[in-house]
Structures are given as structure tokens and as C-alpha cells.
Length: 159
Image (cartoon, rainbow, N blue to C red; front, top):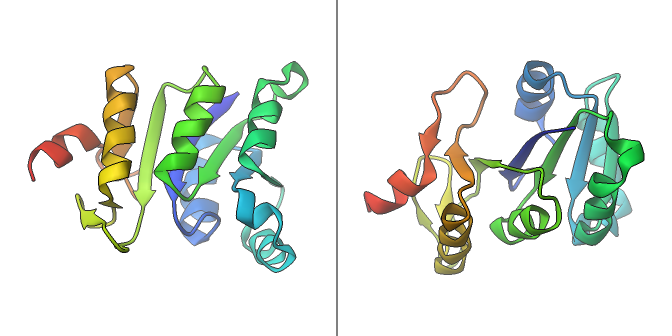
């Protein structure tokens, strides 16, 4: 069962390990990222950051979707972590069970502007967000589970 799809450019880190995992009752972290899946050093460091008793899977986006859609994995309580709106969009297209996307942290980068204190979006990101909103997905901004949900669409329209 997919518990949450989270966009966070840091992927696996303390906030995820110590707040999101226990709050959601997650037993599996699924990092869906083509680059990280090929980088042994990054895989090792993420393995060190994961909480004890939690399984860590690091897969290219296409393989992550295969995992999510395989009936034998339906009993896993999965937190999906991606580091871009583009990858989240792909996961949403490939796993229809997803009805909500959490925007946790996307730092300012070339062409991106802040829409909240921790989320910066490019124009391309905003186009993908608009499409997800048209499909009726909940897009919410929260760094930790105890934060109040902020609707991403509202934050963008306030700019």
C-alpha cells in the first residue's frame, strides 16, 4: 500500500527517517531516481540514513513503477521518495493508486522561484503541477507530518 509520494531533493534524511516513517507506519522506503540507482556511493549513504527495521529500495523510475504495480508488493507500506516534480509526475502516471503528492523540499535552482519557504518550482514544474491538479490529485506542502497542509495550487496562485 502506498502511504505517501514525497518530493524532496534530499531524498532519505533525518526528517524522513524520524518523522515521516513513524507517522505513516512505513516499512519500506522506495527511492525512485534514475541517477541514484546507478550511484553506489549515494546508495550506501542513503542506506546509512534509513531507520532500523525499514527496508530501503532504490530503483530507476521505470522499475519503481513495476514494483508499485506488482500485486506481491501490495502488503508493503511504502513511502515513495523522488527528488523532482518530473519523477513524481511519472510515478503518478504509472501508479494510479496515488491520489496525493507531498512537496517537502525543493531548493532554489536555475529558473526556479520559491512558492513556499522550502519549495521552489520552475515553469516546467508548474506545468506538471497544473496537469496533476486538473486530474484531481491533492498536492500539499509540508516538511514534517505535524505541519499544517498547505495546498500547492493556492501557494502558486498567490504569486
